[in-house]
Image 1 (cartoon, protein in one colour):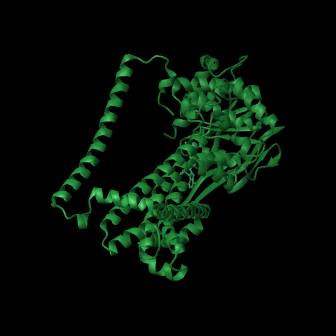
Image 2 (image 1 turned 180 degrees about the vertical axis):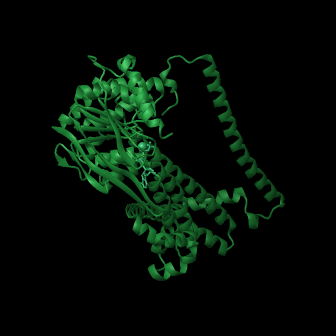
Image 3 (image 1 turned 90 degrees about the vertical axis):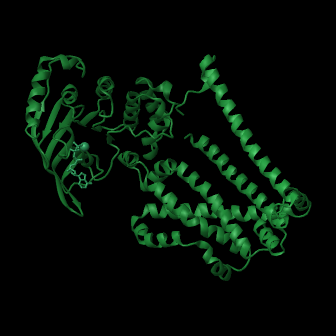
Length: 254
Length: 274
Ligand SMILES: Nc1ncnc2c1ncn2[C@@H]1O[C@H](COP(=O)(O)OP(=O)(O)OP(=O)(O)O)[C@@H](O)[C@H]1O
Ligand SMILES: [Mg+2]
């Protein structure tokens, strides 16, 4: 069964100085465990699309279904990670990681134990009593991911979640995160500007047109590799083929 | 939080030692100058008064202020200080609580906030002391009027300051909380308020001073006790020693209350671990 169904989404923003049509018509679906990237020219409506899927924003038309039920507001099935880690600087890493559980009033001993497990598994447990300012960018990003995963979402939305990191850190963090997500079997929709990043992580890539966004092309990414990781598949001969294709599709809009 | 703490090092490098020693020396020198200036000021004041260069009847002189201080201390100094401190603290606490509560309401509803904007602007620029006679007529010529005056002076500033802080909370933090489905109340309690702890204390520091201004102004108008009363009374009977002594005590009281807020801030920061 599809875990996510996006059906004929359209979005018009109203402001005092006029109307902006951000999304014209977008439909797609995602299976459990799938990793989908969304790429498109800047300002085409990618963040808008994620906000709609998350339930933060009501679309002007169309419907979103997660696990078969319609998304009308923010639900506990969906985890949404923004561009900045947004760790609250007055909370320790431990308390930051529990933030989502607190907000959703599900800070049960089992959930706390799960969050602690994630901290241990992903190398942050010794730093749990540190404050965000004492951690490196990569560690902060991991902490933010654990905060999102601690509420146990079936569907994870990432909006340029790694773009604040420098290139080196970014490569290792995407490798880490990819491992975490595959292990936890989380379905992921990721918006990115970085074409290599999208190829290296995704099972499918959705290429959007210029604003107002429509789906221009849906690409399946297949490397025929066992134990594929974002770093290892960068050396695969298919990688540059995919890259050139997406590059060409997007450079029309430059 | 970011600086390197010296206790983390078991042995300090010689450069670090020299640096620390230099810092300490500068600090001591500054302190010596501060005390020195005060002592010289007092010395020349006393000297010129004794030599008759300045009129000690109008400008008083340190030795007479000191003896006034001693006789006040034997008599009713504590009462007057107590009254002023009490009125200031009540006005201060009320101002902070009511002001913060109003700021929360205005943050919550942008509609109410837009309606009240012109009123806030006018009230903010109005010199509240002008309301003195009105306040006396409404609440009576007693302690209430003085507290009311302190409140009137500090309230609007608190509202504006806190509201400004609330509104400048990092939007991304709020968005992050929304992604977990946070209610407006949760957003306030878990993000906006903690984010503004330092704003709150900055406003407390301003407010303790403003409340004191309000109380002294109130005591000038109506009162039977308090430092403001002593100053007005001393002026009326031309006892400048009493006026000067009271002003000096007032300065000490103001400084102590300010330090009290600073201490409170340190405790709160540790508790909130900023
Ligand atoms: N709240 C809003 N009100 C009005 N217009 C908006 C609003 N949010 C976004 N827009 C407009 O909608 C369009 C799509 O914005 P969106 O942020 O979804 O694009 P994006 O693809 O994420 O851009 P980027 O690549 O820069 O991240 C833009 O033209 C933007 O100006
Ligand atoms: Mg965006």
